[in-house]
Amino acid sequence: MADAGRLEAIALRKEYPGTLALDDVSVAFEGGRVHALVGKNGAGKSTFIKILAGTVQPTSGQVLVDGRPVQLRSASDAFAQGIATVYQELSLVPGLTVAENILLGRLPQKGPLIDWARTFREAQSILDGMGVSIDARRIVRELGVAQKQVVEIAKAMSFNPTAVMLDEPTSALAQHETEMLFGIVRQLAAKGVVVIYITHRLHELRQIADTVTVLRDGRLAGRIEIADSTPEQIVHLMFGEVVKRRRPTHTVNQAKPVLEVEGLAKAGKFHDVSFSLRAGEVLGIAGMLGSGRTELLKAIFGAEPADSGEVRLGGKSILPASPSQMKDFGVALTPEDRKAEGLVQILSTRANLCLASLDRIAVRGFTTQARERAAVQTLVGGLAIKAPNLEDAVSALSGGNQQKVVVGKWLNTKPKVMLLDEPTRGIDVQAKQQIFEIIWSLSEQGIGSIIVSSELEELLEVCHRILIMRHGTIVGEASPEGMTADELTVRCMEDE
Image (cartoon, rainbow, N blue to C red; front, top):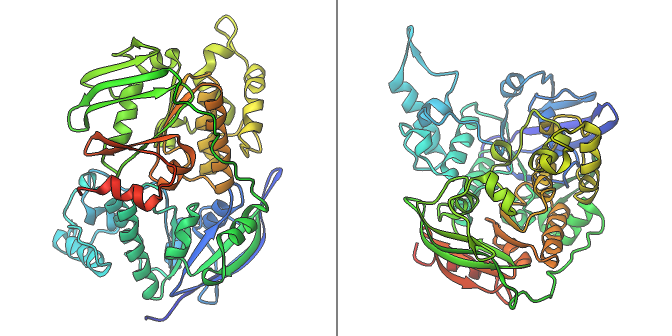
């Protein structure tokens, strides 16, 4: 192993008006090991990482690289000091090649012209050094999600970093893609790089991490060796006691169908999809990335209309219909990409919570901020949305709190059917339980839900019934009772 680096934070503190986001955190990360960084939403992880990445300035405290104090006034400063960050939201340019993305802003030149031969050679060398078979000449838009994530890591590695911070790198990956990424992460650590791995997926920790550092309410709650820890210890450090409810036992087998899908098809996405959702049922759709899960939900909602087939609500055919019409029919969709499709980032948290229900809140076509605040107060409390000021832009919230706003926005419409695409992505254990409890509460009210999730353990925990989707069609059905996540994974991949 090459000489190992070291990244250290000493008494880092960050104060915002009315909020202490980080409270004198001191911790050191050694190279050659994978350090998991965990904590519930609002615990201070994002602030801590942004300080190390140079995008947020601490109120006080120091950052040391290999024992040297460094000033990180910008992302460029962080790169210059050997600190690279790979964020959850990819920052690639889809129309450029892999090589151009890896070396963006630093393309080798031959005189006044770009030296393309050297560009592709250097980028390919980085990819080959990571042990991945991606052609540096390929256009990024042609890559799968996992390959794009690898290109992001390659871009970080092109700076020869001392430390790499990975923010939720597996949140959009299927299990076999996650295992491939883990191999790359281990290679980075083997080269002496400091790897800080931010995740909400606690079941991943034993597979990838050497240590676990826990932040809680802006403070360092503890740091433990993964070999010496139990899941219960980690959860306790993060939250104290977490009350974990079980799926309600009320039966939905005899309930009437609230939603029926028959022969739904969209060229290149899915075909001949038929199923029914009963009133109060929580129905999961399990499948690998690319199986057509997301496209199916969007088609039902009218966001990407199907080419053929029928959707019935309460026995009445309602296709073709627009998202606005589907909302009026009582159907809600929380999309997979919350930032691009679920929220308006520059608007306030209050405004985003009201976006789908303005017709209910307004009186004779007019609304006021006071009326909107009154309409969202119960939601903010019920969903435990941590927002210091509801008038601040929703972009200021952590990813988990943004996801809660997306769900809350639709709960305000009083839906009959909820379509939830990756509803717990980027959400901590406690918040997931809150989302599950909301879904179960809706179930007890007779509201049906369809859930797509890459985390198959969640589907087994929350759903009454699970459909298996492969190659764009429903190929089977599973009962969560007595089934393991491994067994469900095999069923999703049987013929791949």
